[in-house]
Image 1 (cartoon, rainbow, N blue to C red):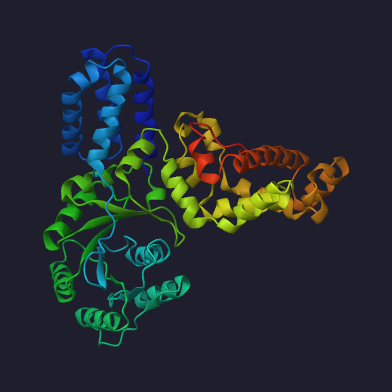
Image 2 (image 1 turned 90 degrees about the vertical axis):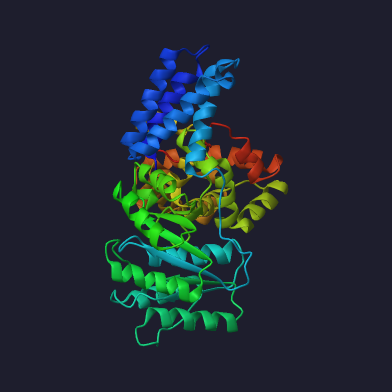
Length: 454
């Protein structure tokens, strides 16, 4: 998400960074580039106008003009205003009410509410350690109830069966009663997708909301909708007391500006972002971190949190113990590390959060491929146990055999060994500097060694 916007704004930032002084002319040039970047990124015109006006007021003030580094000061203003546009602070689920906390999922047909309900349930269980229950009130879409039940079983959350004669309000109230009796912390109610112009369906969800007195009403919207998202958001916001927004399919949209517009139009915070198809591909939305990511400054904090949540800590503990005993980081450890990287969403997810990535040459960025992770895994799988344990013994004949067994070329084996050597050095350095967090914080704008480029 925001790839095009990020690319354009990063160019503006790069041009400003070295400015020893700012004039009305180069400020106007910079703001013109920012305006075009936002419009091409599908941000609504009124939102763009307000955004530019706010930056202009601050740009001609003392905080920029009087700064020793005015170019950097203006960059800070752009970042601050971008953060303000997206909501200032992160806003998660409010757990302060008496449980069960009722979360009502609303949105258009095809916006991804059912899958998002399961993703949110998994997030609340794994991150917040909540006892979650789910129920589907979608009695219109064929197999909708069965779909939620299957997803619930996959993540280990109970999904209440429907036996209430097809009445969504009755289904929801019965599920709430069961959740109370089971002392659940959260009940997620998946509703039927509806068209904003369908008054009967909109009235139904309003009645459903009133019946369960939902604590959270999340508007689920497809990030790829474009400007239609703004009108839809207005209609839902007038019908329901929305408490937040969930963006789905954010990994498939290069613009993402409509998301900024929806936040501004509804006045409601973006709480979560769906970043992929897997059930753990959902992130809490942090406006300040996203602003930094859009401007090419990276998002190392989110990367660290993702590592803590999705990476098996026993792997790093095992490696640390090996290194502390003087045993080396071997190719089997490297193979296990590739699996951990795939669990985090692969290279594309990792790269999006690293500082300085947007300034890499396009040829290099385009060569980042998750298929390379799979290829490396196949090459290692073609090695013997002894070769994985003692990589130094892999010479010419062994390389030919490994390449033939994995359906690759000897050059691919050589490339793997080189990347392994870089990763081996980094793991040794990590063990001396206090673990994974410190290593990531110390990366700065550098790409970590061992990242497999084609």
